[in-house]
Length: 315
Picture 1: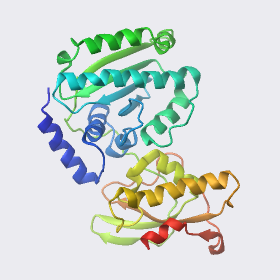
Picture 2: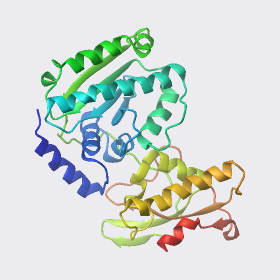
Picture 3: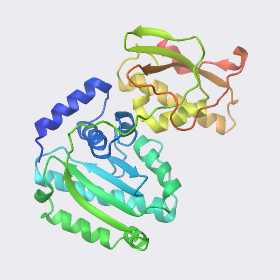
Picture 4: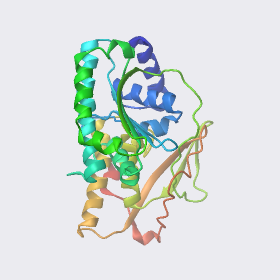
């Protein structure tokens, strides 16, 4: 068992270092991902929720070598009764995964939750290759303190009768696993650092201080929306403008018009012209410039560029 005070200390340190705005239970889930699976903070934030509408998934990780998926529900409480509610949340996660893995579709793509969107995107590519799925309730409590609860037994029964279990167990080495475990707060060196590819404008670097600088870049609207769906509100934690107020209302002036503009372009209401992405920030402690698919939206001449209306709020 780890103490809740130790968890809160780790959360404060993480918030201070990465300027993350999220509930404590979600931040400690990201910390658990980092330590348990050897990924860096940016990958962990992409794979952990920061809001509601998560369908029972607070965090997830896919092990490419072992073809195993880990789905986490986080309960930052030392109360056994409160933590036990997490088993019901894991059953909601199981039902959501059934739709994606067995039916191969959802009524609505989860664009409002970047964690689910990233999981949905991953499952769309590997759902036929999954061998094991681990549904894990993480909390400060030891495994033995939760496995004797009725809620845990009921959860196992529900999983055993599920369509997902029937589908997975028929695969070679296939198995569903449900278990509780304590938060992992022991920090280790990540196996790799996740970076994000953006084509920078040459000779536009602005020095901010010894440890950070600002680069200007062009980015197509579609690519920016995809990046926002992958990163969620973390995209705006240290980005866009250094003077951006740290309020929900300020950030919504960026996120909502950005996605609305893309929808209007797809619907033919607006012309597919380009616009400026005013800032792309990098921290010198980690080079984050060429991970994943490179965004190759080539800029046109100045007459083809326009600034989205919401940017006037930050001029």
